[in-house]
Length: 205
Image (cartoon, rainbow, N blue to C red):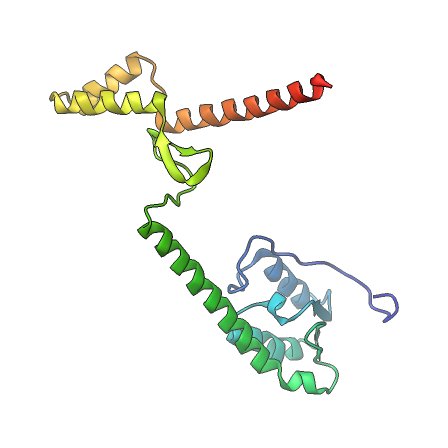
């Protein structure tokens, strides 16, 4: 930056957001700063860091930035909108390639998910009430011995003709935690166990 006499104003990082969308918080902040005249140059590692959608990327690089007199540089792609070079001529093609790459990755991820579902693997973030994830295989569910007893109680009472209200009253009288509360209790217990294990390991030496 210093050798080129550039003054760094801000860094815009959108961790955890898909590059196929331009509704990213940091990207929108950058556009706002451009509108307010705070920056007159945008530098990214390559064009894919700007975005994956070739139509939107092309709009910003070929129309929006020039209208706002903002210089755009994609270092690895050799693109510099204020310099007449051959790399700039390939800009539309690079945008299309980035777009196709994003779509190809999306198809592969969807295909992988479908394959795992057909294999009967569990893909959810948390196990349904009555089950828990196998510690040795996150794609496999095993029975939660505590919660499963509650599920059996509910099932048997319903089969015996008890109303939902009566089942709810019984669970409440026995102080059975709702699934959402039980999940938090298990999470807290798991965290305490891990912490305690670490303390034991530290005090052993």
